[in-house]
Picture 1 (cartoon, rainbow, N blue to C red):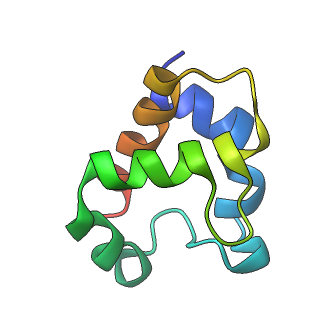
Picture 2: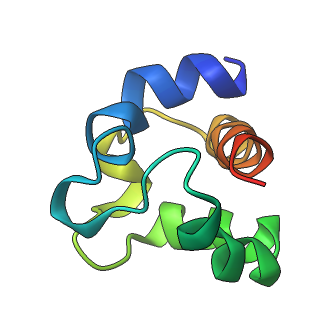
Length: 79
């Protein structure tokens, strides 16, 4: 899957609205410090889970490549 597809399938419910403290998609101020850590760090956070976000964003069937694509998509759209 491509980044946008994974985002829409697995991430948008929380990151689209800011539910449960998730940084909102496109919110530059919220994403800037996260982006500074780099894609590897952010991808690892999704794979492992962080805060209110469960491991793999609650989508156990997503592989690491799909997760990385979604993270990259969110980073790019939030710069």
